[in-house]
Amino acid sequence: MDYIKLIISLIMAAFTILNSMGFTSVPGLDIEEESTTVIEGTTSQPTTTAPTTTKPTTTKPTTTAPTTTKPTTTKPTTTAPTTTKPTTTKPTTTAPTTTKPTTTKPTTTAPTTTEPTTQAPAPEYADFTYLQYPEEAVKTLKANKISEKNYRKRAVTGDGEYEECQGYNDVNGVVISPYYTLSINSKSVPVYSSIVFVGDTEEGELHSFSEIYVDKNNTSKISIELDSDDFKIKNAICLPESLNVTPSVKSGKMTVTVTELGTYTFLFNNAGQKSAFTLFVKEKIDDNATIDLLKTAYGKDNVIVYESGVHYLDYINIKKNNTVIYLKQGAYLIANHKYDINSQSDENLYVEDEALTSNSIGLTRMPFINFHGCSNIRLYGRGIIDLTKLDRRERRGIVFTNCSDIEVIGVKIVNSPEWSFITYNCDNVNIADVDIFGYRMNSDAYAICSSRNVLVNRSFCRTGDDLFDVKGLGGPAGIHSKNITFQNCIGWGGKARCFGICGEVHSPISDVTFKDSAVIYRDATWDNDRVSSLAIIVEQQGGSINNVTFENIEIFKDTGRPIGCLIYGEDVENFEINNVTYRNVKYSGELKPKFTSNGKNNSITATLDNVTANGSKLNLGGVEWDKYANLTFK
Image (cartoon, rainbow, N blue to C red; front, side, top):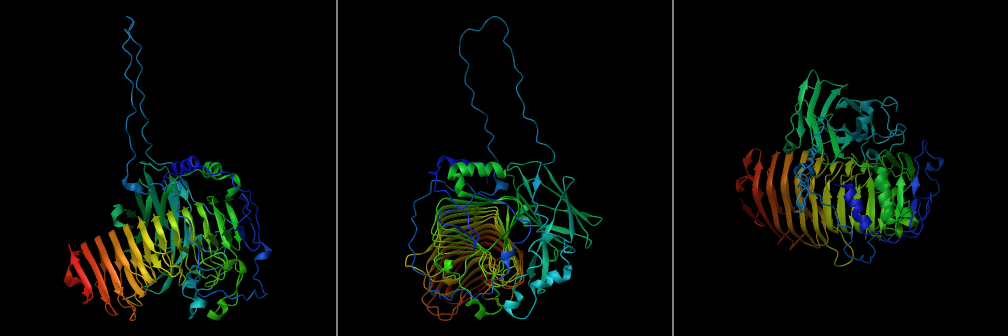
């Protein structure tokens, strides 16, 4: 994405300078009438972060989603930028237009000639910068006084779901990788790690990653050398396979060269799930220049900037139009732990009054970053949101309810204790380059709920539940899910599904597309009917599903069912799933695709066009189906 073009388009439609803003630190950053502009990082945790011991107000929330006024759907003047996959689109190189010289008779002297200028060739090796988190937040495991084994075990600690999903105050969600050292174009680049879960072994592992930034139209070499301090690299592969990148291994070191923006995931020693490494190659941007342009477009008091450094916050609440939050590269936002939640009954003990009027999905505590009832809002930057300290269901991650004209670009989310990124009853949503890591139960990556005109582009997700999910939740009549696209996304599912429509279909869902995407691994097999890589699973009804497409998708390995399209709920009747298309899908998987209904008088209509199963073209004999399914193969 071209950030400069994006911001210039904002300037062309610059808004009237809005009201000046201020900042409140308790209970969170609350933007309704006032805000602040620049927030410096702290280097030590404030004393106000200790959990409150006084029981909060016991005001009971309504159990059903309150009636909400549908936001205006006037098309914003800042149209979303093109999101075509950068690796496949070449910049235009049209020669400049020349004007024919005048026909005045020249003098008899020979005309002066000028040598044509020639463009300097691109350098052999790309110039780049890299992501670096603040040292006070991200440390080695040794500095954190915990072993690698005990750190990984946090993904499987305890027998109960609350104990297993508890928060931790001693170590943050990102650490310096104990496994790798990385050199790119002979420059040392930091490698980080976060805890993930592997379903096959039911163990926690560390997923390592680095991130670099190059010019958008880079064609120069990015020469990568990865060495392991923990184990010997014997062989390696790069995924997705469609990248056509082949690494080499010699003397325990992996080397490979790439030239394009993209997300490159490397598996080692016979493609195991242990010790994976992902290199994010993203567009280089100038934070300060971008912020200046945003201030011109929105008004300087409406652009909230988190500087590089550590920021401890309870939450951020935005309820005003035309607001920008910008997390500079190296901004590390940490959610304060306030409420001890060790059981389901504990969830009902803690109610924040502000939450009851700041969302429309019945939340009783504020999400960490919350937007409600506002339009033309932006969350930008290369910072990270770390929710590791929070207990199970203490807060959600990023939530938009009843909003329109939304853009979220560049941030990372780690270790959410509940759904990481939610939209509900929102219009015109553009999300790009947002990556999400986690291991805790119910830490779904994206839950796009009852929203319209949504694009999620270039996102990598490896969490402890569903990854790229569309739902039709309840609410006022007429709230539908429509025109939703996920493209150029990569999923790695250890506990549930990767791409699909899952569970709640209380309202109609239509025109949903998943394309140009990949599954690395999916190894959750606790219910092979309910969970799959490409999933349409109806458990609660009230709406319908129409026009869903899965296109140009590769699944490296699914140890359960790669494709599932089921009306699962036994009490679901007279429900229709119409016009589902699987086109140019290839997978390696253990179980056959399944198209069935547990309820009565239902129907499923699907087309499988050029679907390759374990190296062979899929036909009717390769699927499970029943009388409710009408299948076409091409």
